Length: 178
Image (cartoon, rainbow, N blue to C red; front, side, top):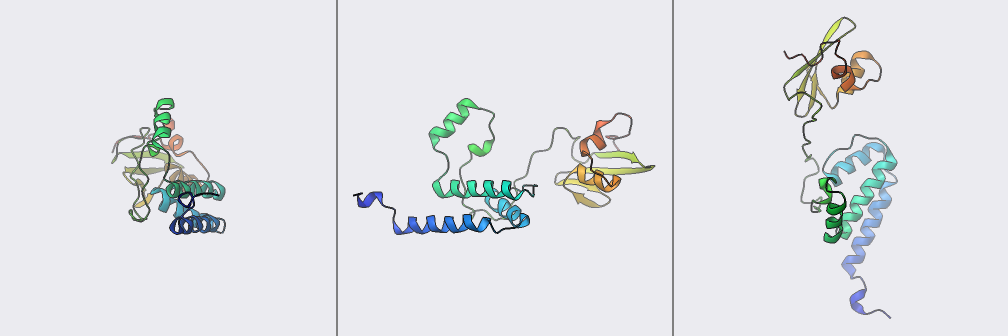
């Protein structure tokens, strides 16, 4: 028979039960709800609506927080094998109660883009379209957009890779400073 010290305490059983309920609740969430939950548990948005992907990653993070994350030995091994691994492995686990859900981690400026404040210009259908690069995204016709692809879709009415549309070809005026 196991000793009293090996048995989980009342508080531990409650947290396991709570975690199980929270994980089960993920199955009934819509893609939008899962995206909000992803922001809550990771502190950064994920721009996918793939429910299975979101559900798996959220469950992994919730379990990681409940169990305390990777051991110091595992982190050292990751550093040894893959020194360029994402910094997320090295960051201490934070409780979602310590950080407001609306706080978003500021991502670094994409090196493929000109500096913030630069105006990209593209002529399409005889109309000149200008997009200003902002720290929070891209400004087009007074509205902020998350991606160049979304703006290219507005302009053309079809799906485009935004980098190709605005920066990829040399025969248009993309990237011209104004």
